[in-house]
Length: 531
Image (cartoon, rainbow, N blue to C red; front, side):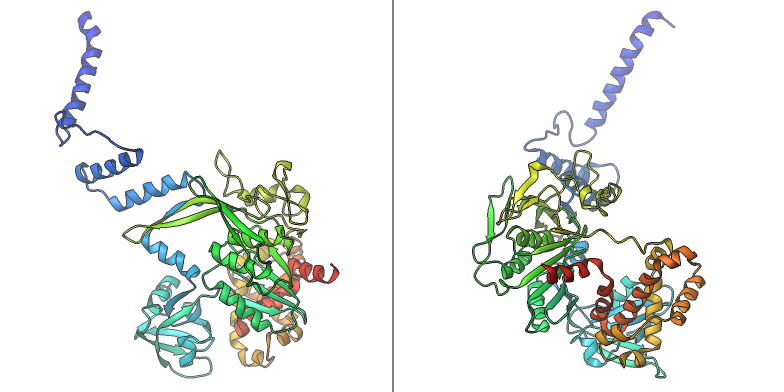
């Protein structure tokens, strides 16, 4: 090969490739005579790229999916709680916080390929026409819904619908022959954020709050009315409560605080400081209050717990809460999708921002595992505390920020009954299934106990019944070792009993039994008596 050609060949190749680039650009609408120029902000650049792809890209493109994915990725780079939500997802996510939906009003479970009514919603359309717990729904509008292909999603699609519309159900009922036909007019069905309240003793009320929805304040007032007079101590269970509406938490805190006491304040880069103080409407300012929290208590739960703790108005019992101190605002698009963007941080009255660390290589989602590995779930001494995050309550008590609400009374997680067998029968739904089958087959005898309280006192899981459960588990290829059986025996019996009570008396039945063995609840009861 000519030596001069060897020298100039690489340059020629570069020139040809470069020419190819310019030739390619000249084939579209943005030729050198009409170049694409990005103008404006970085946000304008993104919108121009989207328009260019939509109009010029060589192949057809799912623009909705690409844009949705790009927005989601962008938001997730900001913080763990800013995100994009599609129109369909938005309706599903918002429903529990709105506190209602339209449907026929039944809690159901698919049992052996059949839709089984666990309980009709009190006062709902199904209860009004005579649907009972234990009924099997086999047809909807003359279409069979029994069989292996039935799913929870499909059942909800069939039973839900616009209020005022009718749906025909075919029902099989234990002890009766043939299908019973019902026509039910759909209505507004409440979603309870307070599934249970119980009078724990003559002076103590217990209220469990699952989420802070729009209806929670009214539900709370109803629960207190149900507890009646004579209550001078209230246990509020916020364990596993992931939060909800800020305003709802403020309204509940206001009930316990004196006019003018600070509940919470928020502040952000573009959001001026905004304070929320108690008003004079509080009716529970002299009621002793104890809050139960754990690592699943977040956001609005932490606002309520922090407000009462910092004002020395309540005792916090349990384990360190989740640590979500970021405030999101929802911005809606024309297609009903939306973004939920973090706009501020919230601070407890003492000045604590309880948002746990994120970003910069922090494993935010792995926080629970990290807490467990360093021993925090078993020992309060393993909780990382920093003097730079030390604050004082109204009376001068020391509290800490930096990631969650620290309890006043620490209760370690109970691992004494843990076993692989217990975990597997819970995870696979075997306790629920066996409890349901037993209760459904002995409904008349169980109802003779009259109340969940009498059932809890008088009914026991005897060895015959317990062995029946073990045989059922074995039929599903699960058998405990002798060590596992010894360790988990009492826990298994308690869960079976609570599961049976739930079928007959709903959540009140379940918690009437379950709380008897609950370490955090028992600590709350003992603390109230000894302090």
